[in-house]
Image 1 (cartoon, rainbow, N blue to C red):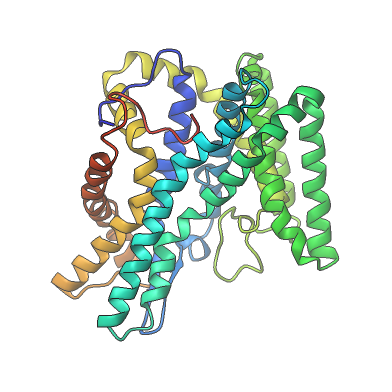
Image 2: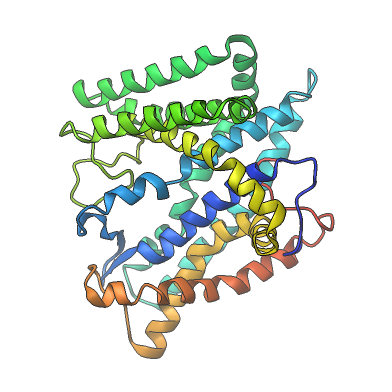
Length: 371
């Protein structure tokens, strides 16, 4: 793998862009908008949304996990469409190994580091810090489950098509009713699979949707937007689609019906932006360079960005005895550029190590979460 790896011409460059872009948005969000509450016993995350009037609105665009699962569904269907009977095991093994090997390696390293630190430092915050560093891996667990059921989901798509989308949407609504009106806690966790499975299943229609008239994209945008407005202004679902301290529950973990509306809204935005982004990827040298680097490094960047952030925090504390404010005051806002640059510097050496560890891959191959 190299930083200059390019996308094969037979691939949909816009899909690769969306996958890489969604992961980079998550990385930048974690670096810039995380508030760390650090004390002698724990390290816990917060964010400025609950403190800043109207900031919930940006989460409707920057909470981009729906985009990632949507394009993942398309690439899985595209790969599986040409598979013959008896090859599902190969399909599953190839995709899961690309995620499991680096993710489990990272988990093992941090658990080992946690034991080492705990043996030399008498501090209760060490294990909460380790868990926080590894916490972004939650989405890989959901993604691997979707990979596991992809053969069944694709066959359901072949047989029932659009009806599967309707069934998943209806099931997500019923599960929310069971969760909130009948206090059935298990329903919340089932919706992890149902709602992200809906985004994944909707991705099976990506090629048809992207070639449909532009009004189809606007239909998704306005349907999702009106549903978001209605659901988040009825005095029940929070307006933010990321967790906010002080809210009765989070729309994201476990996902609620508001995330279904978000999926529909963001799919519409994705379809509307395709022509403009594709033109940039084809004609702008700077866009090509940035895309090639990010596309080559999106997986390790996602896996390692919290490691780089932890290193940056530790180095700044040891050198300057400074920890970032635990609330979004003026100092916190003014220091945001620092918390984009410092974690990026802290992460870069680990990206190089990842490249060295994966050098046996074919020259010019891209890091791909779904191929």
